[in-house]
Length: 253
Image (cartoon, rainbow, N blue to C red):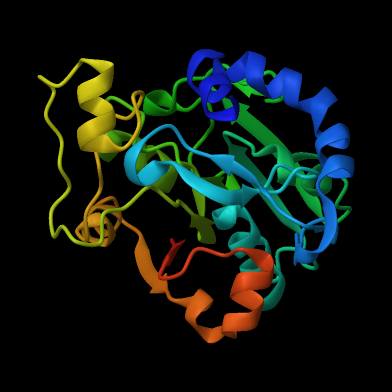
């Protein structure tokens, strides 16, 4: 049933509904086996997530914060390896995740702007192919699981570089097939079921391969793929339900 709802309900409506339902889910799944490091709530089990194939997985969505594996990993990374929570930053968060939105907005050390094409929790709605910001505007930019949706990822990467300040940094995660050297993209694939088959989700238009770093570098970034998750113990990885093997692409200008 949960997978069916993910498939049929449009994303903006799903975001709105989830704001009301998540306290009920958090109470129902309360336990001690797993923990969400973002809100420190503990659960006997997490919710499933994903549509089909490799994207469909069990025990990954934390009921309270609605964080997924990648969100919990990013939270730990920001806490342990950056000064995001302590230093002053002008921040742009594209496609803001619900698990981060209110927490980032409450931080006193950052000036926080959110943007998206249609999300109801975004401050500004815009097309990333032509971002409505001046050159060198932001110290930190988050743009996670967006570049697999856009018409021209190379143009969007260049826009992210353009609006980042010199000395700034960003994290731009994407679904990535580590078994493939090259990104796969075919504009003739338009059928939703075929997109699910080739790109892991019906609204994706490409599946990035190991050349993702090169694409970011071509846009002008200095890129450091960080295997931070592999520095954590197996016990913590299981406790927090983190994605084994996921690299964090830390991009600097």
